[in-house]
Amino acid sequence: MEKTAMEEMSQPRIVSAPALSAYARIDRVPALGAAGLTVSLLLAAARPGDAGRGAQVALACAEHAAGWSVGLDPSGRVSLVVGTRHGPVAVTSASGLDADRRYRVVARIPGGPGRLEVSVQPEYAAAGSEVDTAGVRVGVPGVASRGPLLWGCRSLFDGVRPELPFDGVVGDVRLAAGGESPDAMGPAAAAGVAVMSWVQEVVVGFPV
Image 1 (tube, rainbow, N blue to C red):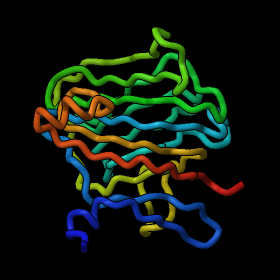
Image 2 (image 1 turned 180 degrees about the vertical axis):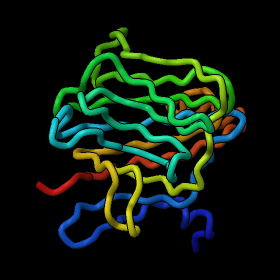
Image 3 (image 1 turned 180 degrees about the horizontal axis):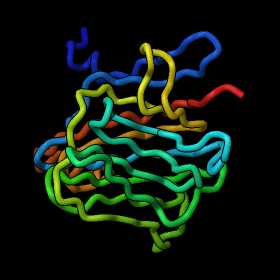
């Protein structure tokens, strides 16, 4: 059976150039709307807190000052950044990540005034273990970006050169409209919530 145009645009495409690592690009994804957006992903950073690298973006749907991104700040802590008409708003986890350890990150982005939140937990954490959660209340809605969704950087200059490249692994990406976690896909689907997921993992990063 042939895929529809929408299905084709929702498939990850590898973007690369000579001497550069590969990044994944998805052209059609749920946009940030009035219901808000919840983003879930697994990531493992090769060099969190590397002073020579600065900030790193693992996943983004951003364009200029609009949109959102999830990555690491220069100290190696998970950072969620959302563009608003008053400028970018960021929320950052309390603790830095361990190198090459896999973490589940969930970002909740309100569609209007509300709580911007990011939570971080090791993938194989013991049941009942504490989740590193940070949040801030925003008084204005985020400015949506046309996309695309990029794994491994914030944007691609000239379509191939990465901005704020991430060094590590990004995978199991899930997006859902609203504030419910896309990890609970059964109830979300039953409620008619738009959920998109990509279970494959992509090794991304800037060459040494």
